[in-house]
Length: 344
Image (cartoon, rainbow, N blue to C red):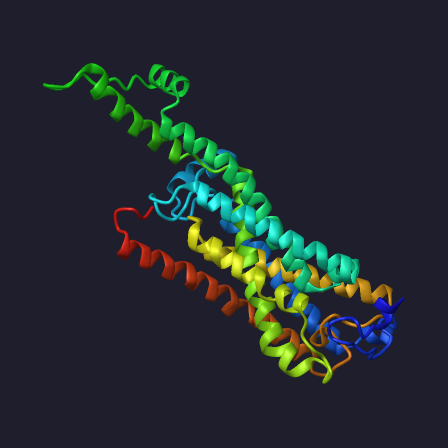
């Protein structure tokens, strides 16, 4: 029962501020304002997703628009690198190393502190980043196979493709039929397959990437700039696990961002907002059923400043997501100027 009452072994050494199951804890102006803000942002995020993901259109309309939309995702973007000269195997190796390291840290955290760690937003985010690298590793394995087949000019694929498309071009003076036909056909083959619309898992992967981007910045900023300096107990001290949980995830995600070729559509901040909103509602449901401490002091609804805390943390989503979007933008600009012929 130490987890419910606030054991000193846990991060914030929390104290109970009141019975969270009492009706008076919820039936007041503080909770009403917080609920309006949280629910309104969830509704707004849902509308944004519905509008820009194209769920309101027919499947045929979505496929036609996908080919025209600048923010579309293609089949190879989940596993290719940012530069043509970097083999996808490097990204695969990086993602496997990141997944093993993150999973090992998460497993060790569960062994040391128990399953109660998933009561915290930090572990939610850390787990999501681990899932991101698990999916990314799988897609990179698939992509490396596709890349190898494409670069080696797999005989079966070329024969079938030539038969369908009829891409034979007559040789010019000084060229043999085979010499003139093969390179042109290979270029057409590669271009055709490079611009295939991404599948469901690639879209899920991109969405998880963008949620992780915002959530990692939010988690680490809140911990290092708010919780640790101002809201932790005086005798609280950092340990290896706490430091790694609030730093290693950002390190690996930034490394993957430098290497990968994923786009970063701004409207997908909506998924990040939904992620945090689900966590907050999850906490409300738990506390309405069981009287226990809050994982973060600013979530406590007994404080008269609770609405301001909720508003402040909510507004932090904008700069946190914006910071990562700026990093992606700066990377793309630098690469396009430094390696103009190799940038994708």
